[in-house]
Length: 171
Image (cartoon, rainbow, N blue to C red):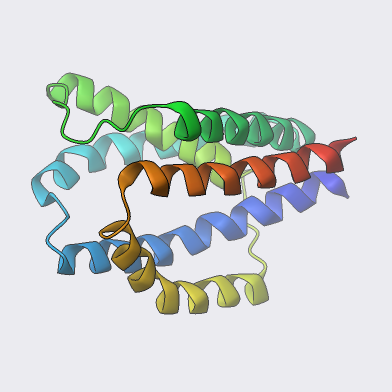
């Protein structure tokens, strides 16, 4: 059933995010590029937002999850391709940071889980985790060597192609 496919895919994605995020954080930490105080401030909002997003996702049919995901990818790819790099801009105070963190949690849950249960495709999970262990250090290395604008534009093209393929599959 198509409704369950998106839920298995995003459930697998969510499960792999835990491992890939840990590998990425570790790689960036080794380069001195993790602000642990900011991490601690954002974590509660992200966790609360993730729970709220999971509750919302539980009520959304699979086809609408795909449509939302495709629209999200197009929006992010456009922003990355044409948006300005804002490194070094001032962060909002704690209330603003908490609100943004909660929003990140909601969106992450909606894009990473699609139902009340977490269905994980174990071979896909294993493949993504294995490649993350190998390639997260390379990604961190590139992120610290390539210009921000170039890095964003390369990723924007990747997201646009992915969104286009998914949109075509919806037809």
